[in-house]
Image 1 (cartoon, protein in one colour):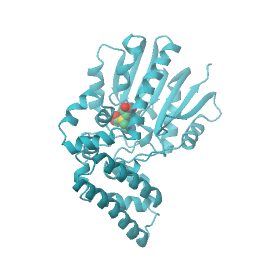
Image 2: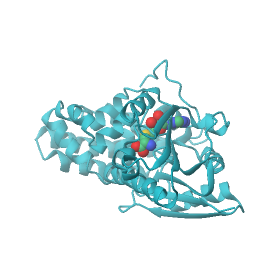
Image 3: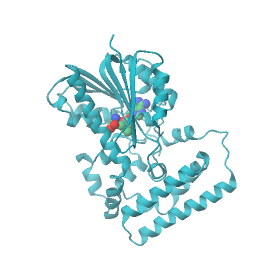
Image 4: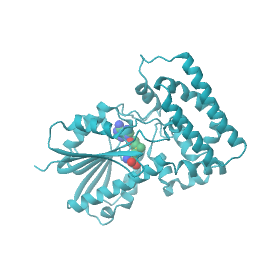
Length: 348
Ligand SMILES: C[S@@+](CC[C@H](N)C(=O)[O-])C[C@H]1O[C@@H](n2cnc3c(N)ncnc32)[C@H](O)[C@@H]1O
């Protein structure tokens, strides 16, 4: 989990587990020793049950489903400070040796790019062809677990999010001729691969911005000769108005707010709206607090997220837009694992 030396991580997003942990607990939260002892025993039982199921070659998907469900329940029952103490205990349990065989879990834990939720991790659950080799070279048990983790509701919602982005860009192009689009924290910009508007060369430009130089290079390589152009940049740079980006008909951020504390989320939304042309839109997505894979992700995937409700999204939007001339909506994706906020800037 050591941070890659050359990696220029933007401190405004909590993409490392260490930063996230600092955000999740405050120093004045004390842990009741009796409570911790009780919950540690409860966790041990949950993990031992999963371990025994693996030893007995029970169906892997069912084992992980039960484990994830029990971890979710436990996470909801305990104080955040107690949960933070339980996470390393789970990670050190022998059952981890089975779970780590899943290529999705393994990539998430090993963090080859030095931080959580990198674009290659998304390729694994997007079932993108570039990830086929990683899956195929896993053990048979690993592939069985992957069959479950890649079809878990949060993964299904992540793939839907990618498709919603494609649709939103294509709709923007139907609304505005030669539309200009900005993706903040673009990753590998997989949503562009299925865009009809991009294929038909109907966009003026589709700019992607990401703090990860590997992702930026991948996008520029994959989309060479198209309207897509990726830039190396960060949330911090956007907040400081460090880039001469111009304005856009659509600005969106997907897979980013899950790592942003509220105050930064508000400031980013304000700044993003400065980049939106009159009549244009800003769309942002966040994993919702209704997901049930949260306990599994935080323990065995070492992938904590800031989960939000529709009210949390409204709170960010209302704080950012004040009494300005904007129309906003908040809605859930089809299985409610991701919540979306959309702000339309009034025509001048
Ligand atoms: C979960 S991926 C999402 C990729 C893509 N938007 C998608 O939805 O498939 C998160 C991306 O956010 C980028 N990121 C995280 N914090 C950032 C920051 N502060 N500034 C710029 N990019 C950031 C990471 O480099 C990574 O590519």
